[in-house]
Image (cartoon, rainbow, N blue to C red; front, side):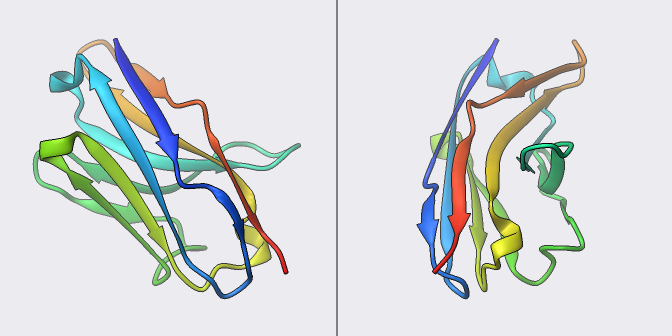
Length: 118
């Protein structure tokens, strides 16, 4: 089992920036990739950014390319998402995800609300 705990959400003004954190614990040795997803009411959860554990390959949704950076601190088992030039469309609940290929398990955090508004 893997436990994920997000932090860093809140109210941000348009054009502002934020950094989300996700602390991973438990059986994390089997995780091959981690990512950030977001969801607004009535819509499907969508991938924002992902990063592979071994070779640190990153991928971003078109909507955040150039504005988001995903990174990991391996020593602290923490995943980060840094976003700049925030827009109202970035308002959502952001979820941390970890994938374990051996068991095909997807682990999720509880989510953190990000609201972009003046």
